[in-house]
Length: 179
Image 1 (cartoon, rainbow, N blue to C red):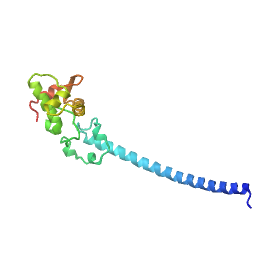
Image 2: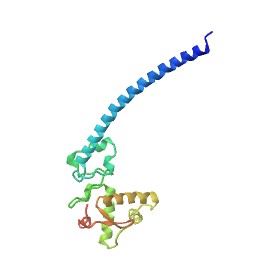
Image 3: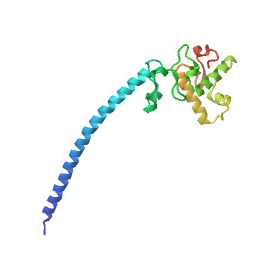
Image 4: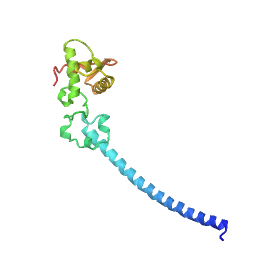
């Protein structure tokens, strides 16, 4: 009959071999992880460079939407830099940039605010815009409009003279009907 100490020594030896094997496997995985992380960082740098080249303003700040990691974003060609796909991005406004570079939703917002400007009605709230567009002014729809309006403000197309009230900026308003 084997002794208790002998049984413990055998189990200890088995456990030691298992620990050594797991350590070797962990070292191998750590080495693979280091290689994969370096490769991933190279792709991140390449992505940023492509985003900078394809940025709507010709290489300045890249907007938050274009930095999300989606393969279709990187497929954009430099020749179509100002042609924006629907719901993709809002270019920074500059003199002479046509409203047609914006998706239909953004053009509707600009048109509604241009109409208010022509009628001297002043800035509009998103709730008022929802009503003009024939939408139910429920919070989800109003917030979607507010998000788009805030994006247009950030890119220079709209001004927000008071919190939650939007109007065209002077340069955009000077373009007339726009689209």
